[in-house]
Amino acid sequence: MSDESFVPADFAVPDGLTAEQFRLEPLGPQHNAADYAAWTASIGHIRATPGFADTGWPHPMSLTDNLGDLERHAQDFAERRGFTYTVLSTADGDVIGCVYIYPLRGDSQQGSSTGGQQAQVRSWVRADHAALDPVLYHAVLAWLERRWPFRSLQYAPRA
Image (cartoon, rainbow, N blue to C red; front, top):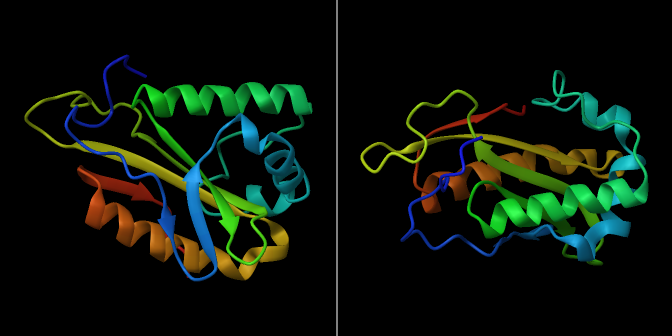
């Protein structure tokens, strides 16, 4: 990935999204234990989620390694190179998934001042919240189309 910003310097990055059953907030180290519990209990389900088949993730790692991943995502967010949001239940505040918004690999116009960026988006929910996956997908897609400056989105559709 380029060291250039993924979004224009004057773009105000949303601090989240709130829907009836969930809310998004930037993923950070404070979510480590709950994030780790969420994805480790749902590895097979996440691998079967559209967009994850060929990613090699999730894969077994320690809680400490997961913390490193969360710190990297938070650094990307701070540097505007990629945006990862945790998905929290509005019922109890528990981590129930994640949304990743990163530059589409191979997009030669990343950082261009004239063309928009292309984004690759992935999201997952815990296996015990599987019914929420299409709800999350449609809410995030509408939010991205309405609020973000991307010229195109690659986000595997849900039924």
